[in-house]
Image 1 (tube, one colour):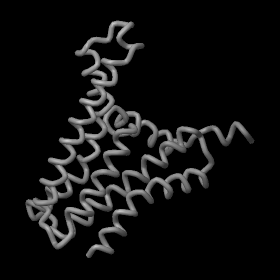
Image 2 (cartoon, one colour):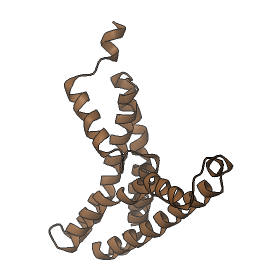
Image 3 (cartoon, rainbow, N blue to C red):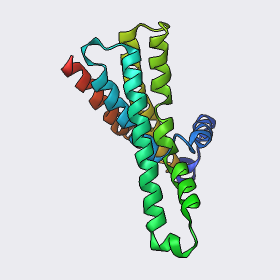
Length: 181
């Protein structure tokens, strides 16, 4: 019985393979933070019927600034860390490590940005693009929560609860946008 609970189905293995392929830039702590940040930016920037191009510019500029600050902070922390300094971590190594760890903050905006871009090109109407981009954060956070609990081999009920809990961070911004409108 215990062995059966720890085994994964082919569909679950497919989800895990998909996540492993995305993990370097997407399934990280900084990607979760970036997804929440982007959701908040979309919720705030898309008030008063802003066009998707205005929202896209706001998101892109803010994410790049936060990403740069994250890289800078990582370099500074690693370079000044006694453990790393004694083991020979120089400025370049600290910079590379910081870039690698903060990549998720930058890549987490890709899906919402593509949706907003579809709004700017009129593939999707502006208002709809803004809402779909906002909802994409909910879906992404839910996916990351599901995968986290799947990797722990949690039972299905726990995976679903974990999905709902992580998706709720994005849902807060959907509610915020609805209240502001």
